[in-house]
Length: 312
Image 1 (cartoon, one colour):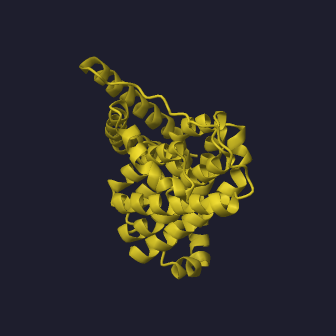
Image 2 (cartoon, rainbow, N blue to C red; image 1 turned 90 degrees about the vertical axis):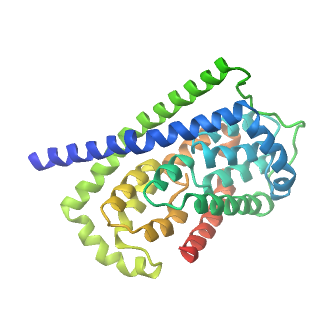
């Protein structure tokens, strides 16, 4: 019993330290920067400039905005944008392509904190953006080709807060700070439970039993056997939980920096039980196009995994 209590306390301490001393500072800075950029019209300017380039790839203006949100805010940020697309005249094919892209992208709330322990954040963002757009293209022209492509124009635009004076700038900063704190506090239970599960499996000997059995598979992809638990955690408990386990393994030298960057293409995205459930909560039309979007996301994540394996 005392050993179990010790594991709980150790997992709790590690989870709280990750949430408040790694996750929170990074999210405060990034969310503040992105919310100020949004309030100053920077995101809308970027969307307008990228629209002529990405429209032929099957992405509408709102899809481009969702791409920027997931890459630089968090994986949950595009939910509001997908909800606008669900209620508006955006075609089902464009919604499917946008959802596939979001599912395959590296989410900012994992990329930036993990960059602090050795992840190549810039390469991860660039590779995921390119592959996610290709996945969206495959979804639009192949997997979702039988869906309706009729739209009601003009396409709606998301509403942005304004920051025209010092007071409104401070308001945006305070709002971004509160949002970062809410995200960090909300991550604590999942981080603690994920670390607890990992520590329990390790103390019970389950990891020592499974790692030799799966070693040939991992060696085929040049991955460390220790990657087993982060991968399992990722697809069961989500990206935030995976981040906590992986960062602990990196700090404990169970996963090398090159191994971390090879794994990034396969693990850093919202394509998991938790991520899919949150994203499809945007509305019934989003749920209706989930199947073709999953096909496109799988293609994009496969491309990401191959590229990360070749580069790192």
